[in-house]
Image (tube, rainbow, N blue to C red):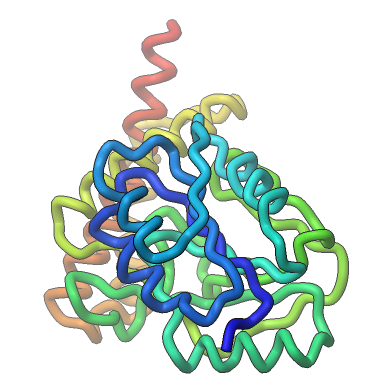
Length: 257
């Protein structure tokens, strides 16, 4: 039976992920895909799964893209997902139960990383997240209760009571190292430009210390060592992202001089 929830996925050349994501959303009342003019088979796959597809330029404004989706959603409850995320059957059951209780206006979700085919025991954060606490993503909420803010690392500001779901999303962020490096390059450029726009500068010692600290945090603090070689590689990738952000920031500042 369909549940009165609108699932929203933002896409850009996600043919390798979108099918898996949509296959786990057959319980939703509607599925909306906001596509940034993909040049692969993303749109065809989405339509074949029954999704409503809207084409709209991202222009590196994730909040704007998500707010546009809110205007297209037919249901009061909206679930935002990335194409590389999966809602497991156990998470589906929890979402349906908590939404029907109608005690909250939104819910935070946690996320478990699936790295090169297997879930990591320790990591539940994207490479660009520096915070030490567990990740909390406000992804499920009532569409009339708030708006998204922030061009990148966007946040959904919901006015009302917000709860926490226990079952995590599965995040298939890095199916292979090639994809990992492409994502790191993409997000590090966005972050470097964001820091530059805020007038933040960097130095040689930050280019060394920040990546080192990122590696130590993820391999030891978050116990990445429990995942063996897989955890070691993941920690290095996180560290590399931190290095690229500051190296690119340094380069951007030098070009303007």
